[in-house]
Image (spheres, rainbow, N blue to C red):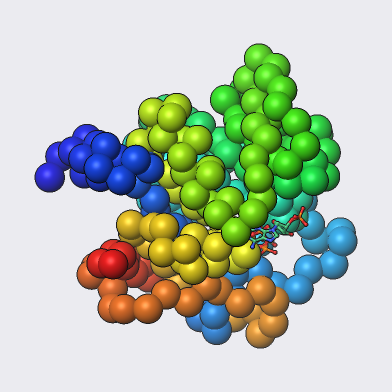
Length: 215
Ligand SMILES: NC(=O)c1ccc[n+]([C@@H]2O[C@H](COP(=O)([O-])OP(=O)(O)OC[C@H]3O[C@@H](n4cnc5c(N)ncnc54)[C@H](OP(=O)(O)O)[C@@H]3O)[C@@H](O)[C@H]2O)c1
């Protein structure tokens, strides 16, 4: 099915974007190690350059990309497309209590960025704060808001709490699980997903498993 139909038909039917979960875990099942303060502020790389290219190619064709509060703080990601040609997805971050500093790369104003929070509605040139209820259905509230903006697909990049929220709500369509060739021995455990992968691939020293939500 062409990419447009793969996204558009479920978008119209379910009134939410096509949701792709994505994370990288170590051989021993961690998405981050226990890092000290001075090791924070950049990603703790798990996979190699070819897998990174693959991730940027995914970003270049999807409409939006979402991270959790701790990920924004710990990794300071840009969430832009830099390793291949293509447009940047709309960046989205959860910041319930508005505790993220303006100095983060996400707030550099270069790409449209949505900040879901429980405190204010406010719009500057490229950064939009959107107030929502962080009740039991907050994942649904966010997806409904994205639907209303005609955002047809969403990559959920982590961390663990955010990915688990989408998994437990059953609100995902595909999951991309990269496994890197290293061990952390401790840290934040990778999310668990049931079922068997529908696709697997070796990418240099890394492996990729793709799952589909059949429920
Ligand atoms: N390897 C990978 O692919 C990958 C990808 C992304 C991130 N990571 C790693 O993951 C780590 C962060 O993961 P994390 O699980 O600690 O944090 P996270 O999912 O990035 O953010 C969680 C934060 O969001 C709010 N929150 C509270 N309850 C929540 C819920 N049920 N669902 C979603 N968010 C909730 C909380 O902030 P408030 O207290 O403000 O409410 C919470 O501290 C980072 O260290 C990063 O390096 C790894």
